[in-house]
Length: 404
Image 1 (cartoon, rainbow, N blue to C red):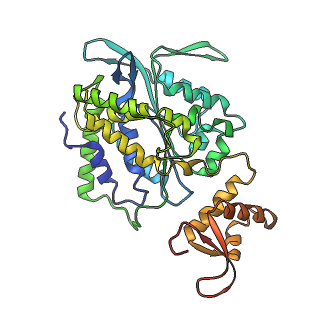
Image 2: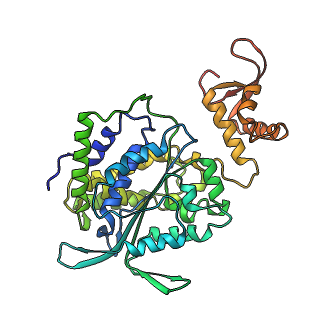
């Protein structure tokens, strides 16, 4: 089977162009689909260690605005056509996840003729908070996901209530999920922010839908593109073995790595909650570099442009990452502050009665004073006593909107 596309990822982004979902979501969904197809039979040689291309990608946006779940469905529709790709359920317990990993173990013949047994599983969770569970009871799940991300090569051992110790051969876990800031707040304790699991997740923030599409038809041209995407992802799924840097790429990588400083004041995302994430950024770059090579050809070589493109891709995502945890905090009103600020930002200008009408189910009049005062003091809005047409009353203006 030969490839039909010059670049699978570019073609996938073009395939999803005429949809309502936030544009930034589609390339990351595509990368997650490729990571699911590659599985643990592909890695990058990095001296004494191996870097596997699995990703934890979580799409984040306010509810019902940018079509998070819809965007995921386009990728899953193609992934479901590829054989030997194991998927797990949206909502699952820690024990069931381990059982799924154990059940999906399979043997793969490597380029040198050796047989390699691995357990490669992808989780597609349109409601990531359902997968994680509530923060009062999900500590074990958070720890498990943190440990599994690193794809250790030794068999994974776990105990069950009835059958003693079970063994999973060579684990590879890939996750694509979607959530809202408020749902993250309900799932992640404040102690989990900054390190552990969140430092292993690439959070993709979507702020607005791409365009309005009354009826999203699958035209004959798009159907032909879909068939080509399925064909080429099948080819990608058959790649196996270890990638190596070209000589030029190794030189450039060493130069970039020596200059990289995770706590640099020049970094794109200033939020201290991402300090741990930045310490892992070089590893994310390498994972994406493997994917960037795989979408173009089946040769096990990483060129510098694969790495350079990965750096650019991450920096685009970094620009809005700080919005991910706006509703997470020790304050009792963190979610409400985020909600009110988001409404004002979306409207540009809104009267106090109209704002209260939108939020009265979640914020009573007494609590509102504390919430709106916090919004204003954070510089997210300002209060005025005259509307845009000269109406008298209390109005709130989004400070980030030009002209307000």
